Amino acid sequence: MKAVVIGTGFGGIAAALRLRAKGYDVTAIERCGAVGGRAQLFEREGFRHDAGPTVITAPFLFEELFGLFGEKLSDHVKMVPVKPWYRFRFSDGSTFDYGGTLEETLAEIRKIEPEDCAGYLALLAHSKKIYKVGFEELSAQPFHRFWTMVKQVPALLRLRNYETVWQMVSRHLKSPKLRQAFSIQPLLVGGNPFDTTSIYGLIHYLEREHGVHFIMGGTAALTQALADLMVRQGIKLRLNTTVSSIKIRDGVAVGVILADGFEIAADIVVSNADAAHLYQNMVKSEDRSLASGLKLKAAHYSMGLYVLYFGTKKKYPEVAHHTIWMGERYQELLEDIFHRKVLADDFSLYLHRPTATDPSFAPAGCDSFYVLCPVPNLQAGIDWAEAEPKLRARIIKALDETMLPGLKENITADFAMTPEDFKHNYQSMHGAGFSIAPLFRQSAWFRFHNKAEGIKNLYLVGAGTHPGAGMPGVLCSAKVIDALIPQAS
Image (cartoon, rainbow, N blue to C red; front, side, top):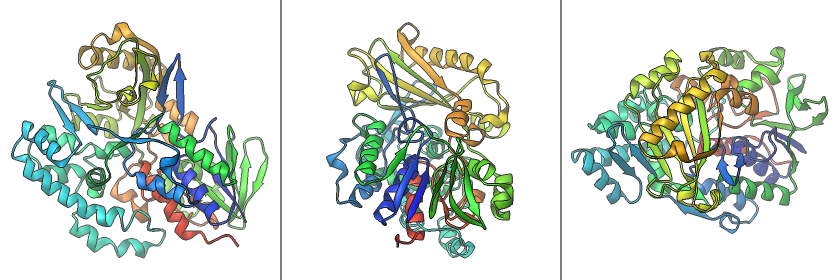
């Protein structure tokens, strides 16, 4: 039996490998020039940059994929722990190093607010309870049946998942700085901490239980190892190829149609394309179910991302691998991004310095960086051709005056991606960084189903489906369809 997988982001890679392990003849189609979807590798003038995800928090999910074929992840990539996991730099210049042992984290908390040590331990205990239900029980659970979700309501109510992440954190911590530091996790999956259900509070325990890691050679080394595994197992890869539509006959997906008109027949079609793009552009309106049409119409999307990649002609050895640079405003800035949809003059940033761990990312004596700035998605109507140079200049100035003194004189080989690039390169609806937002009304059964609504033999993985965005989420979406798709006959 034949299966076609559209897109080789981590969800598509995992789906292709799981289908191959079930005995399917698998063809995986990728729009970009290399496997990985958004996890591409950029190279400029001797500087290397992971284009997308950089934080590995659930390595066992990758180990499972190699284990399907009797192999070990550790034989193909070198994974190392990062310490600290994140360094927070607040607007007053103070810092908070998060990560390492529990004792080290408590020591850092004690520097800011001693009374919050007990609150953090209580937050971690609550996060563990959410993790046990939300991750271990529900992340790989199919939710295409409404009653599956209804049965979970009592447990979710006991865990107070009607709270937002901000409310959950504020219930345990009193320091405004620590409240910010421990509520930013939804931003890593496209959500506003003031709107996102507290089920995403499980990330605290996920990080504590499994650590935060980096792949030597970057995330691109991991996608290459996975691509090699796919080839070894006989999966056919078609790169630089765009799927324009799903071929549907009498309500059944029977293959895909490429942009050049070529058709590939299949018994099973798995889409790792942006779920909203799939239903809007790849499925004819007459083939859409009422449910998917309503979800598409009512969808609320994650924020956009502005990413500036650059090298420096000097090293900044005091800068951590991962830094969260917090602006003066927090809730108000998030309001601007998510609700008012305006590009504010201020910002908060995520700064990635892979050369802190792997010097091969830059020429000798240099550093490699990317800085990610959450911005409104394309629904804001921002003219990025005009806005991008101004935002770039503001970010460089801010970093030059704080963490990276002398940056203006030492920056080199810089280039950027805006939400326009996310829309064009990855076919992301409205250029959203993480597909639809992780709101309660867009979770579980309310999210785009992993088993397509109204179309047989079409399955969905990736950020817009259950359980959601982020590497653990999209890898688990492939586990969901693994439970739904039978062994090849």
